[in-house]
Image (cartoon, rainbow, N blue to C red; front, side, top):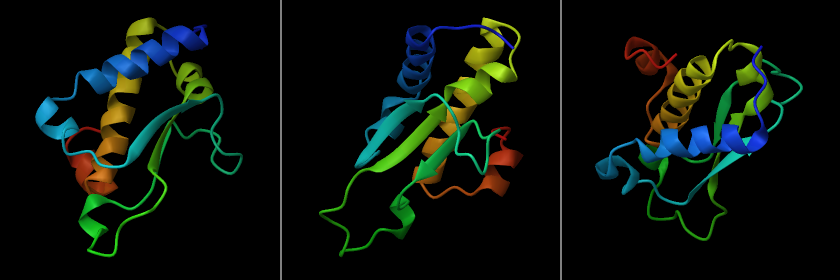
Length: 116
């Protein structure tokens, strides 16, 4: 496990999001990216979570809803990493993975693409 302050971890999450091409981020709609200390108690090893309605499932009735949420969990990520480079890699994979869910891409396809 690596020790890393909350501010540095948040910087890495922001950098991972900023590295996504504008052509994709311009299409993200009604989503907030949140950093939480711990994963849910029923899935303590979870690194990230998308909670919302994917773009592929939205229809003309979609509107007036709270933003979708993408959670990146700090403690579980740090627990599996030994270096800052490990954290950068895991955070990048997790951010891309969860954003892909917003676009309606399922886990099986993400695994095929290397975003497990």
